[in-house]
Length: 289
Image (cartoon, rainbow, N blue to C red; front, side, top):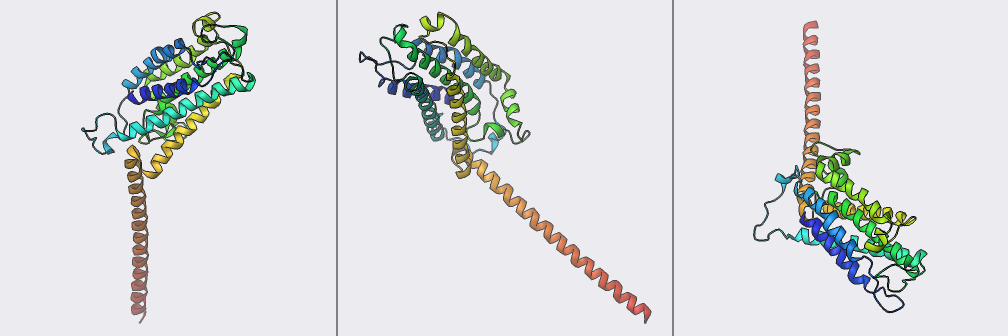
């Protein structure tokens, strides 16, 4: 819950602060997100995700982790690093989506007075805002599943009972409240973007079409970046991944030990068989004499 909240805040800070650099022909900064879009993301989308994460059960490997230092509090080094990395990923992708729409199809046209209302010169800005709003919403929804474990992959989170290519379905379905909160978040994004009059007058954005390619592309890139960071943590034993690496090493050592024991048993069995055969031949030879 705390991780998700901080990632959301950091991404919006990055987006809105750097977004001040985008100025229209009057020299006024054009906001990548309108005030109502920000409130919607924070009060509607994130609220139900926070409740769902609050209902999340402890991970199966929690007893394998080292005891938490109470003097540190909840803001551990791992949480601080992860929230910054995730927040930078999310904020950067939101900025890139805004730039792609404005300076791609929009040819860099930021219109005039687009922060207060719609006019013919604000078409690109309003479409770019809808794109950023959709990207931010979808990334927050995916993050709610990714932060269930700080180091295990979303696609292989519960190794104790569910593995293989379909393990991700168990991961997302296990917490039913969170699952339906994410589904509802995806579904409600579309009426917010397309509902006539409400989209332009209230949220200061307009309907989009080809921009959905940017939205889903950002989701894929974000998941790839987060999974890459988690894989790096597991490979080098960083943070909560330390016990995972140690356990993997122990399992590897155990397998090697079992293989060595098996080879030794086979060797002993072969030696015993040879000795028995030799004794049998000797007895046969003595009987014949």
